[in-house]
Length: 171
Image (cartoon, rainbow, N blue to C red; front, side, top):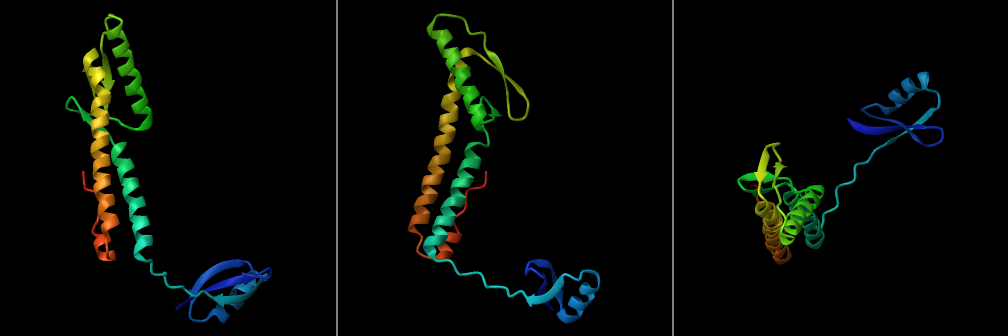
């Protein structure tokens, strides 16, 4: 069976079919849809072979996407997983700055309950709130360190097979 497009009078495609007898299908279609006037075979073009440099660019984009997912996929703090998407990072920064400013002003910071990725309410003191961005930064640096190592492997790859072996580590 081959693939054919049935064409309207204006040359636009009415539908695509797979058949061994396109003329019979054309005639059957014309009985109900007279504006269908012709057919043409759909020729599948082979996928062009990509060179190593193009594949390196594609692999690097794949690793960047994996890096971003990992970085925003949560981080461990005080035995819990906290969200690390951009909105959560802003909240962490604001909470930490508030606790730090209270400490610097000699005011009491009563602590807070932080909602973790799984919905658990994690009670934190002022100093623990202040340390959240540090844990987030360590998480981010670990992720970026992994990315830098993989980028170096991509850059050093001399064959497509070597490049295909490079994968973001499973978490």
